[in-house]
Amino acid sequence: MTENTPLAADPPRNRAAVLVVDPDPAALDFLARTLQQAGYDPTAFADLDALSGTMERLGADPPVQVALLDARALDPLEDGPSLAELRRRSPRRAALQFVVIGEPDRLDRVLPRQITEVTDILPKPIDRNTLLFSMQEAVRRHAAMLSRSAGPAALPLPSRRGFGPRRELPADLQVLQWLRDIDEQRLKALDGVVEMDATWNMLAELLRARITKRRISVTSLCLASRGPVTSALRRVERLLRDGLITYTLDPKDRRRKYVELTGDGASRMQTAVRGVAQRWSASEPPRMP
Image 1 (cartoon, rainbow, N blue to C red):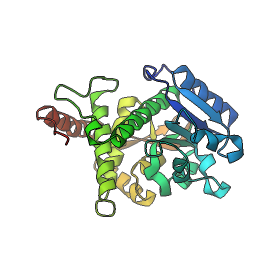
Image 2: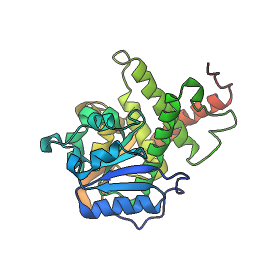
Image 3: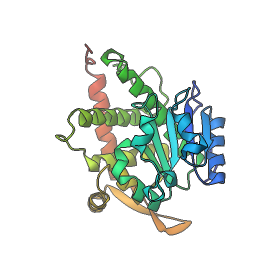
Image 4: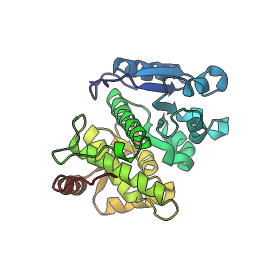
């Protein structure tokens, strides 16, 4: 992990409570210190053992908004709990956000069966920018989930003049977030009837990475598809053939591949996202009952 890059975003106005779990003492110190310096309120633990106090913290006040967890703590081969189990312990279980970090092979083993619970996946090593962008998005999603639970009238809608009163994120990124929120609600309401679009999920994740200057490994991209990894790999190969994505090699470890949008892929994704923004801003927002 590195910490020699500038802060990715301004510190949050309210100190968001973050539960941090990582068995590696150096990594745990880096994560907790970075979050504290950025204005968050982290509580750090080495594992998810009930005796460590981690579970007690999940159910205590102030409620944890984001759980930042190393995949080793969730590994079923080591009797790690599932994310669903952790969610049940939270007083704000519906809004709790999970960001899972770890080595790609560990992520591949731990996450496929519970990928729908995850807000973001961060392969190690993690730099400061990547971590803080992920936290910013997770806190935003937590606030949005709380607003939904308060009733339909509280659902935040973008205005015709732009994308909300605060422009903390680039407009393209905000539209991607709204589209993901809409998709999640659609899938939740029509569970078993409507299927997610794995290819779109991967392209959207690559556009987010391009905007936030993150690198996406092949494993992380497959997990971002929120479908079977083997099917995702076939989709990756098709996107390569179509010229929408390309591979780059890690200069420090040439066995590790990263995926990014090509110029054509980025242009077409931006056309799609900005088309949605233009259509929305040109029409009256729907009235909520």
